[in-house]
Structures are given as C-alpha cells and as structure tokens.
Image (cartoon, rainbow, N blue to C red; front, side, top):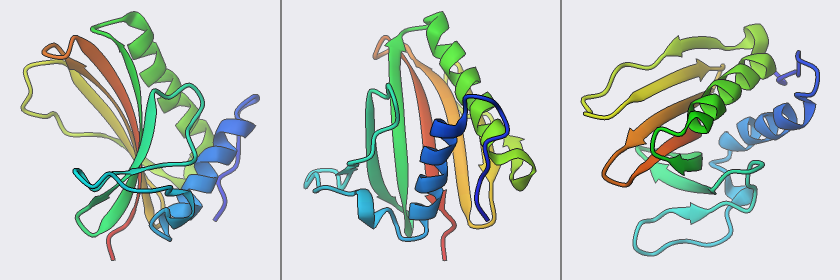
Length: 147
C-alpha cells in the first residue's frame, strides 16, 4: 500500500521514504553501489536530503537502510531535526503505520527513538548524544521484516 503525503510540502520527502520502503522488500539491491570489506556496510547511492551519510547494512537476516545526521554535542538543531523527521514520517504514513516509542537503552547519554511498523517494513528515527564523540546523532532506519 503506497504511503501518501498528508502534510503540505511533504511530497518530496514522502516520495523518497515511500521509494525506500518499496526497496526494503528487495533488500535495497537497487541502491547499493559497492561494499566496505571491513564492515560489510554498503554505501547507498540514494542519500536523503542533508544527511551526513547513508548506507545499507546487513543485520540479522535483512538489510537496513540507515541515514545519519551529525551535530555538535547537544546542539538544539539535532533535537529539532529528530522532531522534524518524526513529524514528517507521521505525515507520510498517516494511519497506515502504528507508531511506538522505542524502549530506553542502557546508555549514560541521552537517547530517544520512535518506531513505525508498516505491513512489512519498520521505520525508526532516533536521537542519541555521544559524549565520547562530542556529537549528537540523528538516525533514520528503514528495514524490511525478517522472513
């Protein structure tokens, strides 16, 4: 079932997310452009707007598309990006997805995540302070259900 943009101005973002959800069922084979022999991560040829990096990683039976946005530690713009992505994802999925707040992690720094489960795909957006790296990271993951 296609994802529709229900918020004005969201059509481009929703089209990209819809395309990625469609590609998840084929393990993102159409957007992979090589491999990193050390990690197994594959650089993605489709990068979401203004993301620092996007890649496809094989994780527990299904590949995961991940984009990360890097900010200085605890920069207000990082938390704004997290909230903006969450709001935009909600607008794209509407009632098609069941949203839930992710479980807390055992981590000394700040962490928050929101998950959206479609029929066969999970989309997660998170924000995490990494004091040892002096960065706050915002991540978006798209993963097909494990068969």
